[in-house]
Image 1 (cartoon, rainbow, N blue to C red):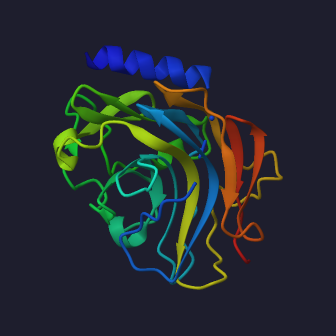
Image 2: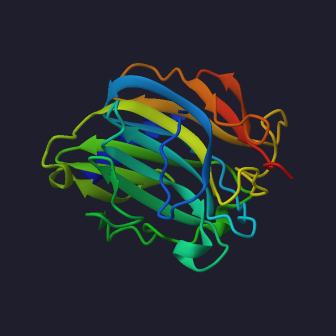
Length: 248
């Protein structure tokens, strides 16, 4: 069954691109900055290709990440997967794979909150993926199948959140998103988002070939909380460049 799920996800990723901001930090920061795109639709998940980068937070800031998210339209129930550089959580400046979930608007913690690793995959939530920095974009995905939300890295299942986490009430998404996020301790941060390049540069970080799983064709609406610091460029309805150097 997992092979069938994986094949379906790969097919959708190859065929497809991005989405907006859910605050997902464990710390209480002064300001969160977002840049990405989103689409409201009933789906079984989202998938796409993502540039993996290593934006080390400036002194005092908390993290810089990029993720795909599936949620209810009110964003009270959420599934997330992506990469993050978060020295407070991981104790280093490496890029780590992360997962997360929200239940009734409460964050369940990184790589926890009912998360079940898929033992057959040696790359699990929290893994150091710094080796992927500077390489080709990596397929990430979220797919509801059976009685769980399955999460994917490099088109392979890394684990799942069982429906029982939500009492069986969250089995389809209403809002799909793909975005970069900086959790800062100042109103004008110097932390990079993505690879630090503005979206106007062709070298900017990208959410590419984003697709809705089991829903209409993805057609993303861009958003940015402060385009002077972190902007985006909609290359197509399914592909978005995003990021920037912050205020510095």
